[in-house]
Image (cartoon, rainbow, N blue to C red):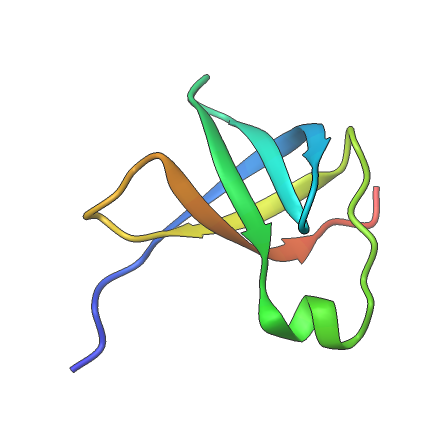
Amino acid sequence: MKEELLELAGTVIEKLPNAMFRVKLENGVEILAHTAGKMRKFRIRVMVGDKVDIEMTPYDLTKGRITFRHKD
């Protein structure tokens, strides 16, 4: 049984070690996020200022997973 994920959009505001990022969501909340496995596999670079899509679990609203980087 797959849990229900929240999908949100945000902007990367800080790059941290170990493929972690500080992301500001559209609603103004700042969270910690890491890149998804497929993004690591295909070496998709995420830089400060990039618009990204985030998946979050409803159980911990302070952490998320970056699933998509927009090509703006």
